[in-house]
Image (cartoon, rainbow, N blue to C red):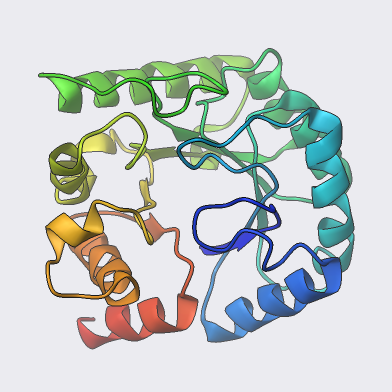
Length: 250
């Protein structure tokens, strides 16, 4: 999954792809490099970021989706926690909702079911606008797994087919560096029969996990290790480097 941030303030590439045509070029480039999904985000969830309104998020997102959805041959995912934004994304042809809030916004599971969109459910112990204020304690692995199973059950009850649900244990959200590393190396633990997405690219804990590597090299190594331990998808900034690393150990 190639990351396409169209935000002015994302932690590693804020403002780089704000222009819709530049964003589209990058999306096509990532597809050529081997991305199987393009994930477009229009609201930063980095530490210290401020929430934006649904209207502002849509104003950033819509021009990019109009550029890329008709032309890409891979699915387009939209990284949002707001039902109103997801509805607009569906209208513009997006295939997947990647929700860092675990489909907890009112009407989000039902919208995905009604539109036929796939849903990626991420664990987050915090709420919108409060993404990094809580750190998990003992028993965090089971707590994450329980949350994901409960939210997957709620998605199924809302009418989302099981084969259209994937789970993300939420590396970097309310976890310590040591916890993030344990999660990374236990990808399969969270599955419960659902595909698992791991999203560790460029996150700060990588300096602990892979001392001596630069952030890009560590991100590719983390993606490979995630897959080694059972992840079905990895969400990354540098698609070419990650694809090359994964090919080394097929």
